[in-house]
Structures are given as structure tokens and as C-alpha cells.
Image 1 (spheres, rainbow, N blue to C red):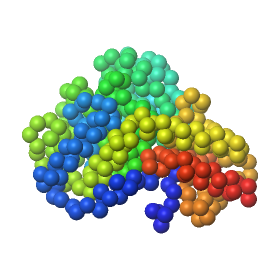
Image 2 (image 1 turned 30 degrees about the vertical axis):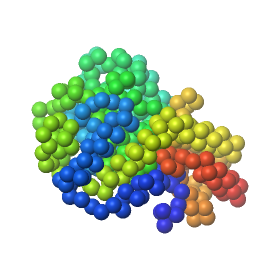
Image 3 (image 1 turned 120 degrees about the vertical axis):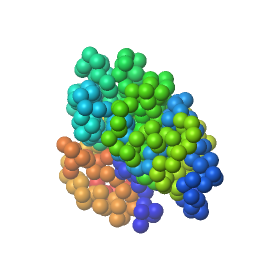
Image 4 (image 1 turned 135 degrees about the vertical axis):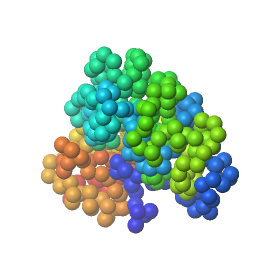
Length: 359
């Protein structure tokens, strides 16, 4: 059963105990004053974790992919130039979403495992409406630099995917001049999948498209329901229990302290990467841009991907993710994030991997 396993893949992390307790709370109505107070406090907690004062900071009712789509459909219309950095699967997905909005997509590519050059993104077009980048590329374990983009983007809107980075490494929306950032609950926030935290600057809100092609993901309407733009209006039935869970997960992160949480992820990631290197795995992300919360490695010669991952799952209750794209079948993506990022889990993982690869 999943709750008996150590989730160390690129997907969900093991939830915080506070989150599991929150999920068991009685369900209130989505317009109940007590629930709306929890929703308001959840938005306040998100502002602290995103490090922003943006009024429009709220959970989108959908997974991280809904956050991505909401970011693009609200500001990209037919003919709008969108510069997208692509060095993994989720940069590719950004291109797809922007193109479906009718955007004129300008790709800036870097090889898998390498970080994007911010200057190439800035030089890709003289006057784009949007520059978009994945902060922590889940498919490759690479961290892309965001601050240089915000400092020199001019009038462009900067969209940043923080799905794997929020609460695991530093995310500073206001300091980096990020206009729209979105994340997912299931990674470093230690909450099951189901919501997409999102924040949008006043400047981005003022440059929304005239008619958002998605009624459900129209941030103007969602912000009214969330009460972040004035009088509250009904929009949709919010997933009550998931908001409880997010509220609790954010509380756990803030009680620990963001800097402490970053340090815990950094220590666990360093130990995993050092341990795997000693076991003959090749670290695939470029040094200096490796994520601590998601490690990508090429398997040692002679180790069968499916057999080894199945052995880890069946014998030790440890789930790790396989490679995707050009790394499928030859690489692993090992997540160590949220509540899972504990040294005891690192020791268990490395011991199990050592036994499996030496069979």
C-alpha cells in the first residue's frame, strides 16, 4: 500500500503528519464562513512561501499542470510572442500550452542536464509579451536561474514554473520580479496532489487577455471567489479537504522556517548524490545547477532499470522514478522532498540501492 512506502520519485512525497490529520477533518461547505476563513489564511501562507505581496495568490483547483495552463491562458492570446526556455519535459509542455493559446512561440533550447543561459532567453526576441522558464526542471534535476531574467526582462511578463522548487529551494517572487509563478502541492510542500498554488502580479493582471479561453481557469473570476480582489463571488466548488491539507502543509513549512527547510533539503540531496556517485551512478545534472530535492543519475553498466526499481519497491518499499525522454530506461529520478527529506530516509535509500545494484 502507498502509505507503507517511501515515495522518492519525481511525483508525490510522503505527506506531513499535520496534513494527514487535516484531511480527516469534517467537510464544510465551500461557502461556509469557517471554510472561507481557512481559504483566506491559506492564501496568506502562500504569500509567505512564495515571498510575495501579490494580492492574487491562491490555490488553483487542479494539479500543477492546471497552474501552468492558468498562467498561460490568462495572458497569452493569438499572435503574442512567448519566449520559452526548454531543457526538459516541462519546458516542452510550456511550448505546447502557449501554442494552444495562439502564441507565437520562440524556443530557446539547452541540452538535457544543462541549465539555460538567461542571456539567450533575453536576446531571443526584442519585444516578447512573455518569457517563461521552469525553475526546477523535474525531468532533469536542473535548476535554471530566474533572477537575471526578472532583472532585465523589460516590459515582458515573466512566468516561472515552481512546481518542484517551492519550499525546497529559494523562491523569491517579488525580489526576482516574477509576474506569474505556479507550483504543485505534492512535492516540497508535502501535501497530496490536487491543488496548484499560483501568484500573479498586479502588472500581469493588468495585461490579461480580453477574453480568457478557459472559463474554469479565468484568474479574474477565481480571484473574486478567493476574495483577493474585493467582494467575494461564487465561481466553483472548491476541493475543501485539499485546501485543509494545503493549509496544514504550509503551516508545517512555515513553523519549521523556510531557510531551515531549504537547509534540510540541501543536506539530504548532497548525501544522496555523494552516495550514488560512490555506488557507480553518474550524476546527470550539471554541477552548480543540481537540485537537492531531485537527483537524476545514469544507471551503472549492467543494472536493469525496471528490475532494479521493482526490487526497491517490492523488497524495501521504496519507490523511485525512471528516466523520461532521451533518458528513458537508462536513468533514475530520485525525489527527496517535503516530509520525505529526512536523513533516515536517505540512509534507508542508499542501503537499499547498494543491495539491489550488487545483486
